[in-house]
Image 1 (cartoon, one colour):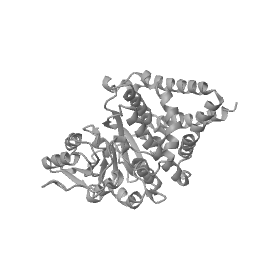
Image 2: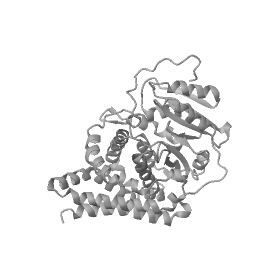
Image 3: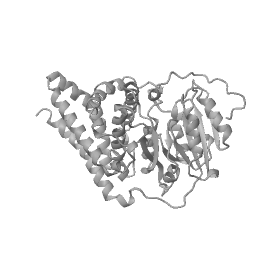
Image 4: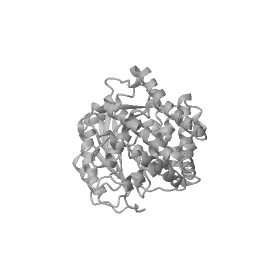
Length: 407
């Protein structure tokens, strides 16, 4: 009976994130993904860059060939003092295409300040953020801009697919995790047009809103220590906090590579844990202004993040961790079945699908992530490394640009 309140709390979280969210999307199905016809604003695609090598060239080429009027499309790459040949490859693409521009930060500033740099230089009405290791679908821009159906909508996010789903057991697991993260966990937020985290992999913003929020974005810190991680969540939360709407569409698609190693996976999860801790705690004062269901989700997820490590430790100390482990296995097995029978999954081409049994290791990775990464993230909030890419430490002074390189 001692564990009953914990499991009741988890059940409430489940209801709010899945059942209520599903009900809301069904109730508002007709207005959930509204579009406007004929809207073709000027667009600048901003790509923050750090140590991507030749792949940045391929990303840029894919962007300039998107299905969008060329005279209304430009690409700006912002290099954050890469220590490899990324900058040279970006410059090569710019030399070949007149609507590509390459900027370089004077020192390693982090992703958000790099994007702010590009936004200040841009004149387009819509800014689209695309991560440097992402390939987006040719029609993604059209799908994004079509969702700006009213002035109150300030940001539109797209759907992220894993480009290497069947590389190994870990990428298969992440493929299913991405599926739930976008097609179920965000249902409540999508239904209320207040998505609290739009991915930097592919999101479109009204430029004037980014300019309005720039002072807040530039000065993000914890007790005077600048914070460079969790930029996407922080920006989206600030947009909602300032009274704008944020939406998400599954029809604007992009592809990103999932971490194929445990080290890369846990580095990514650690960075995300830090982001969750910071923005959940900092945003508590604004949570009450959200829709009641969204407020409940916000507070319950913060509580789950902080409390669940103690739940795991308590079970281990009492010698009944097996019961908790079986609970995790049962939950993961249920989600695996949901993935297997989901119509949206069956509609995907075979190379984008994985076998549902691949999700079962999450029964182990989930408690490990809560037990180890939550406290580790809490005690390393001042970290500013680009951990998700596994790159070396960036130099603080940029090397000289090659002769004739665009700026």
